[in-house]
Length: 112
Image 1 (cartoon, helix red, strand yellow):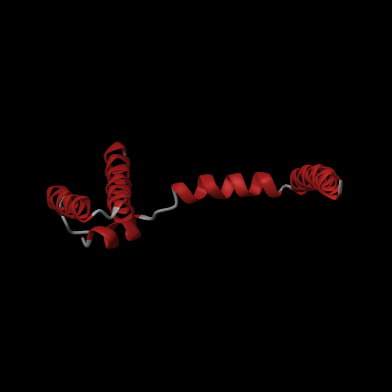
Image 2 (cartoon, one colour):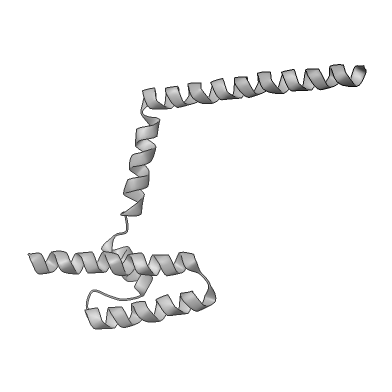
């Protein structure tokens, strides 16, 4: 008999707690959308993905402004392959983003 009462109390308590957590989460989302926190976070995510500067890209690849594109590509391929073998996906992606950034700068210079 006591076990049945205890089980009922646990079920009722967990359902009440679940509803309270859901309502708190819903209220937090409402507050975030009213204050603009959600939009600001989304903008920061978008900005963060394209925020690598040309100087940072050159530092990652270990090249200077005088380095030719062919030399930069050799450096990129060497670093990319080295990180592929060692299993560092993070470094490999940084090297790739650096190449993309320098490629965009080069294309922009060719257009002007």
